[in-house]
Structure formats: structure tokens, C-alpha cells
Image (cartoon, rainbow, N blue to C red):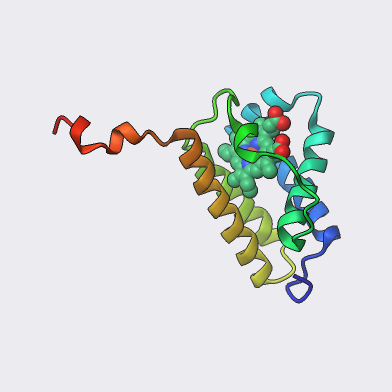
Length: 133
Ligand code: HEM
């Protein structure tokens, strides 16, 4: 992580900048703000400790991401590519190295895929017996 330029100060800056842009985003902003209104400072701290825990394997984050996203009103699958595009653009502006951007993107894409499956995957749609043709 150090070789890529990733340290706690960078994570703090990334989280602050990214969620600032999330809030200003026409589709993402309202979905986040409806859930987090009045709780933004806690969310920012949580996200900093989440990314630190993943980057430095510090175990500092003890939350449950899937549960946290359950019941977020108007959270639809099409928002995930928008989230990822905004995260990529933010990393283009801030990442200390191409490797740092690649690491954050690979990690975010993996988690986005896993969240999308947990939140929206419906096995019935894949069951050949239930397909009408
Ligand atoms: C369109 C996509 C997304 C939306 C709309 C969204 C929205 C939210 C909201 C509203 C919360 C706050 C929940 C609460 O405290 O009540 C939250 C928490 C969180 N999100 Fe997302 N999220 C998205 C994608 C992601 C992705 C891709 C990641 C992974 C990099 C992620 C990681 C987290 C984590 C770690 C938390 C904190 C969970 C906890 O409470 O411990 N989210 N998200």
C-alpha cells in the first residue's frame, strides 16, 4: 500500500471528495441523502474506517455492508455503474499512482458485484423449470 502511495491521509481525502461528489450527483445524491440526512459525519467516519480496514487489513471496520444497503429506498441496480464511474473519475483526479487507482477500482467493483447479487439476485429467474420460453 505504501509503495502505491496509499495511506490514511489519502483515504480520508478520497472519502471526503468522493461523497462530496456523490451528494452533488443528480441520481446518486438524493438516494444517499434520503437515508443519511443528519448522519453524514458518521457515514464519512465509517467509510474511512472501512477503506482503511480493507487497505491495511486492520480490522478497524466491523460493519455489515449488505445489511446496511438493505432497505435503502430507491436503490436500483443501475445506480451501481454510476457509483463506480464517479469513483473512477474521483480516483483519476486524486490517486497518487495508477496502481492505487487500479487497486481501489478492483476492490470497489468486487464489492459492487457482491452487493448487487445479494440485494437483487433472484434465483427464480435462473431456474430453467420456471422459464416459460
Ligand atoms: C449505487 C450504489 C450505492 C448506494 C446508493 C449506496 C448507499 C449507501 C447508504 C445510503 C449507506 C448508509 C446506510 C446507513 O447507514 O443507513 C451506505 C453504507 C455503506 N456503503 Fe454503500 N452504497 C452504494 C455502493 C457501495 C459500494 C460499491 C460500496 C463498496 C465499496 C459500498 C460500501 C458501503 C459501506 C462499507 C457502508 C457502511 C456500512 C455500515 O454501516 O457498516 N457502498 N451505502
